[in-house]
Image (cartoon, rainbow, N blue to C red):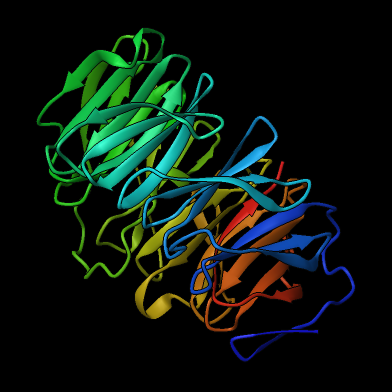
Length: 353
């Protein structure tokens, strides 16, 4: 029995049917909890400020970025950090391109290129907070929040510019890569923007503005639900999902929700979407049918649902309940809770491939 911050972490029998390893960010502990086969299996400590940590995987290793600018390379076989590098004062996202790790910084205004051993390769100065970093083949794409720009760089030519789009929309804050399009959202604008990554052409789309809500958490567009040829986008400052066709980037309408959404994710078979919220509905998740484009169920799932993931099999939904100090497991379809694992102040959930 382990004791953390007054929380009793019980080692119990498996509570889910899938045999997999899950990393859960412990937001206040600068650590990742390791969940294996539905049981607590340890902790990866000393990762820096984990208040906005994301973990991605490449080449058999995990790479975690901290809010205070550290990138940690993790060996999932041992669940230990094998190297840690400081690449800025405030990191916001990372992605992989070719044999490189590309890191988007808020502070300083740079995008940093590392090799897979976390050695510095190149620093690209942008003079802006940088968001929505994505990669397709040799193209590295990101948005400049403070300059209202999108840059496309060529990894085959020392990350030299291929295209720079200016005046794309006011305050870009996150982006999605789908169907060879880079789709970006704007905080102070009622539009989306799309870059066709074959033709390198930019196209805007005006969204239904709706009712303006107070934003407590900015929607995370990087985890949009893509299903059935459409993308389901959490509205900024409104209680709805926007629905956009991926084939022609045409606006298909909205789905009304009980609160302002943060994350939207699709099940592996594309037949189910789950949504969580900020503000007064933060204890709920909503289940959406993407085919009929309608809400099926609102579930009171836990005290402040921070994040969630569908299992690879699509049979479970894992979610982090911050004030319950638990990663909870729900059965997809019946939506009953089947178990939980105690985790201190959990937020992001990441499945180890």
